[in-house]
Length: 138
Image (tube, one colour):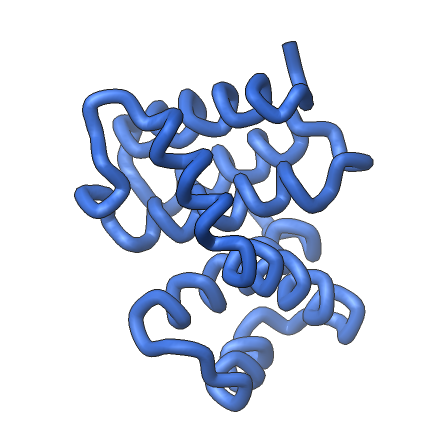
C-alpha cells in the first residue's frame, strides 16, 4: 500500500522523536532524515511541529501514557512503541480540531506495519483511554 503524505509526515515526526530519545536534539540530523521521506516543506514543518510539541511537553505526554498503561511501565516498552505513543498523545493534546479517531487510526496503521499485534493492541488501548481522559471521545 502506498503511503500518503499524511502518513509519511507522521512517520517523519516519529523518526524525529525516536532519534531525539536515542541521541538528543540535532536539527541537522533531522533535516537529513527529512530528505528520506520526500515531503513538501509544509509537511516537513507539520512533522516538526508534532514532534516538537510532544518533546517540549514530554512530562505531560509521558504522564498520560503512564496513567493509561496497564501492567506495563513505559520504560519496558521498546523505544519505537514509546515514541509512537508520545507522538500520538501529543497529537491528541495539540490538535483538538482533528478527530481523535483519525489520530488513533493513523497510529494503528503505523504500528501494524512496524510492530506485532500485541504492540498494536497495547497502543490502541492506551490511545483510547487517553482520548477519553482528554474528553476527545466518549
